[in-house]
Amino acid sequence: METNSSYVGILRYFAVIFYDSLLLFSVLFLATIIVYLATDGTIIYPIEDTQTSIMFQAYLFIISFFYFAWSWVKGGQTLGMKAWRVRLVTSDNQPISLRHCLLRFLISIISWLMFGMGFFWAFFNKQHRTWHDLISNTHLIVL
Image (tube, rainbow, N blue to C red):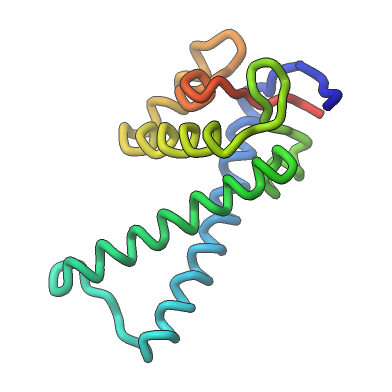
């Protein structure tokens, strides 16, 4: 795979995150509608039905993972990355494996749970790499 190894700048990085967040919201909205229709319009109340709520959250978590993993493994790009001409590669500029995807996805969740600290790490890293970039041995490049 021939790639340009220039790292993505901060503004483009956060633009990709914003764009992909909108797309992921749409995917999760459709996934929720499917569950809503499949359960004859039953609303899931986290306090009243904890087990169902946990299953529903796991379902959305898995849908989210597959959105990113499928995009990254198929071509190294989500729709947001395509729009901003960015590709995800390993540190030696190779395509992403499913293992990279899982590690990257899980660490990014941890970053979000820590108020975005892992994402804001890009401001302090010379190559603008986040925690999930560093731990999964991946980075974004400009096409």
